[in-house]
Length: 167
Image 1 (cartoon, rainbow, N blue to C red):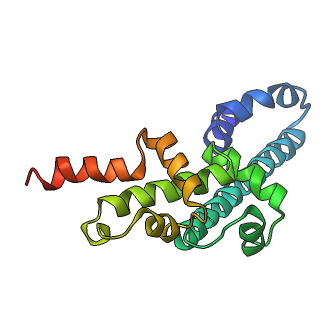
Image 2: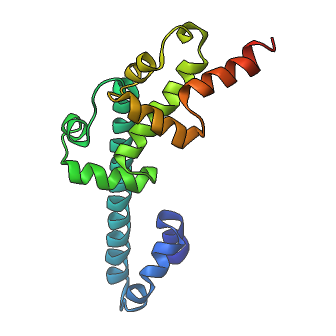
Image 3: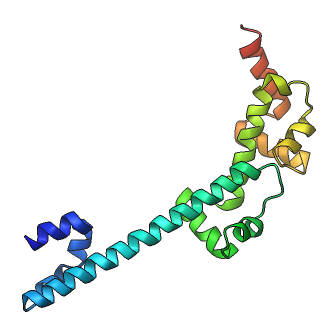
């Protein structure tokens, strides 16, 4: 019964990790105290994970709202009241990419949207780069080509040839 209760409370993995301690219990009081300790430790662990996820979600929201401005790890870490080192570590842990790569990819995806947007068709590539937060147009163009396989100008031409002219 205790095993089933622990499995439903903390999961089979946590139960298996603590099996040797459970088997060492000599009486019900020891077992009760151990079960309480296991559950509390598991809840603390889940709370820490949840808190990290919330931090990463806040960071992503900041990037989504402020990608046009100069954003650095230090600036964003200050906005969430944490150290840049900690932000960097948990951001990579939860997103799978480092902070600067995430911002760069976010900006490139936004630039692609602008290049496809009829309202921005008259804007030159410098204006598009600036609108998404790239301060160096050459870096923007090289990064765009690296990610999408063509230059921003060529992408825009191809997009309008395929989508707009075929309507």
